[in-house]
Amino acid sequence: MKIGLVIQGPIISGGFTGQTHGYGKTRATENQLVKFDSNNAINENVTEGLLYFDEIILSTWKNEISKLTPEVLNSVEVLGLDDPTPSPPTLRKPIKEYADFHTINTVRQFYSTVEGLKYLSDKGITHAIKIRTDQKINIKLLYQEFTEFISHNEQKFFVPFLVPKTPWTIPDFYIGGEISELMNISMAMTNKIFKFHTNIHRDIFFKSIFMYSDFIREIPLKNFFIYQDKASSEIIKMINYSEKKLWHPGSRNLYESIIWRGQKVKSGTNDKKFNNEQASSMSTIEQNFKDNVDWDQILLILTGSKSILKLILAVIFFKLKRMYIQFRSRLSYLLDLTKLRKL
Image 1 (cartoon, rainbow, N blue to C red):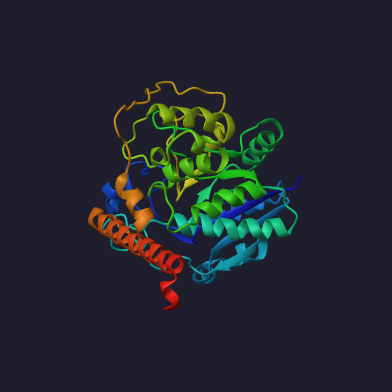
Image 2: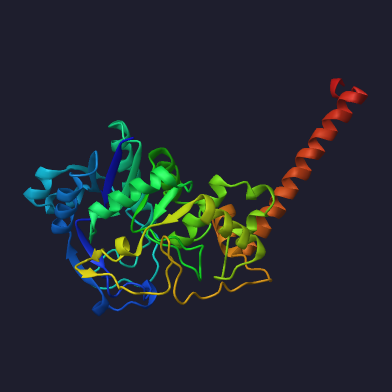
């Protein structure tokens, strides 16, 4: 068994900090954001990581390499990647000085993860975990918990925590697992078209269920496209399966060791479930017994548009086309049967 570490993301990182995250991008104001030079965090993670991990790779963008300090360049291998989404979808209006904050960067994150995993795989790494460039973390504890996870747990992926109120939201600060499995889910997350949900944390939950369970045989696919954060009986089945087979949370100590863009993450929160710990004030899952399907997202996946009119016209055109083809086929058969074709 050989364990590798992927450090992915930009070098100059703009956005929430450990103290301001959680307010939601759509409601964020500029005074909640910072521009952060990740060099020191990367250097500290690499320096400590070299004591434990068999291989470390820094996966970033070509235009970011010039921003790296000599200390980082001399301590770790660096992948300089082309941006897979130079025009990513947007979530909100731009905020001045924070060029990428308003965009959806799921594909970027997982593409850089995939490329880092490919590098590690070529080096003979069997298991890997990815972290962010802009987060300092207790590397020794990360390695210890991930190694323990590999040796003693049947779930596929190691993650920071689970969310009792909405267990279909998976945090992505760090994700680890067997390298081929981690590559599979990461590649699925780079798909620019097929998304169960536009939100990364929900999309990775439903994609993992789709990839690793047999629920698609018994649960209609529409139930994977959740609209509101309410659980149907089908979603409850998915949650139970995912916690047994897919997602294993790390400890509170590990999560609270994170310093994100210069500030420690909030400690003592009761809205998260960590390993060997139940949330002290756990909210019950809100259940829904009515249609909770995001039909817009289904339309977008199937037709490339959220317009129901376009779908209706496409179906009408298809039916007319099929009727014409069937008519031509029957006419050809009759001509052959009556030998009129030879006349």
